[in-house]
Amino acid sequence: MAGLGVAWRLAQAGCAVTLFDVATIPAQSGAATWASGGMLCARLEMTGAPAPLAAFALGARAAWPAFAAELDRGAAMACGFVERGALHVSFGRERTGAPGPGVERIDRAAALRLEPGLADDVSEALWAPGEAHVDPRWLALALLHACRMAGVAAEPETRVNRLVEQNGRVTGVLTASGVRAFDHVVLAAGAWSAGLLRVSNLPGPGVRPVKGEMVSFAADPRAMPAARLIWTDACYIIPHADGRVLVGATQVESGFDASLDRDRVDALRDAAIRALPALGGLAELERFAGFRPASDDGLPLLGGVGPEGLTLAGGQFRNGILFAPLVADAAAQHVLQGRLPEIARPFAAGRFTEIAA
Image 1 (cartoon, helix red, strand yellow):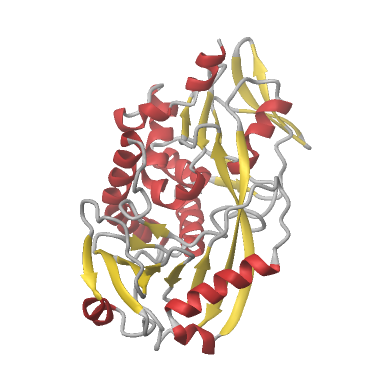
Image 2: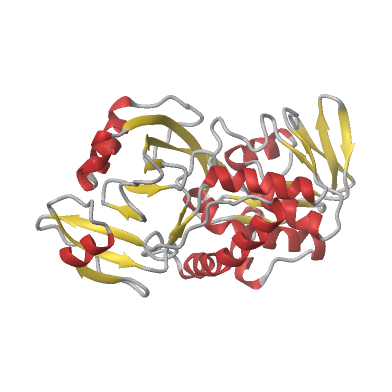
């Protein structure tokens, strides 16, 4: 996601851009974007987040309507952006947490007016009308189309073996076909970013994979079981326009082990059916997982690190889709102007090398 977004912004600015990926573009197997739910929840998701991260999330959410409209035009296809709010429901005598700004507590009757298919034992909910969601797979495809229409050269199934450094500056990448020279390199390899830095003998922050498992159902797009994002303490449910209903997600520290745990995914499915019983009558469509890129301090990694000519765009952990507009703009600005916008400066990737020094 970050790589496509930055490539698009740089191409719009008149740069000649080449996009590499070891697999398909957009990446699918194991990629966080392809396995994402597509939540754009700057309020429900960010409860208790550090102030700079909460501000970044709210700024990104505010940027999404214009970003989505521009992308739809640039790609000549829809990215699946929907603004319908989100409900965090409670059951029986459970109580939802205290509502923060932009969130209100509503009773069962009000929750049912928003989502009539909720379970009989839903007792109350937190209602966040400003939340939204996007179809992450449509989004990735739309970004690829927009990149191509802006002149980006895409090279799928091309492994970057290492970054090339000369005289204190990154000057290109090494692939199987040899060294490819560039004025600037943007590293947006998700959970694999730290590994590429290591094999290139370059300093940089740690990024580890955190597996997220999901399950999806196949619904009739004309008769969806829900219209908006629904949270419980055990899962979230996201309906998409093509009939897919996504349910997620686990959070597992297991390296790059892509195997699915049947019991964990069954628990997600059962939690979703408890909240929205109509899901029990739908066929399962897919079980899948992706690797979220988590930095050592849980914050995004943006801007320069180590030698000149290198920009990082990563470390978004659970919020790569939400942060996409601001990550694309911040990384592109760093490439073009050598600095990050103020809202992104708390996430400067160089903070780790400065600590080490």
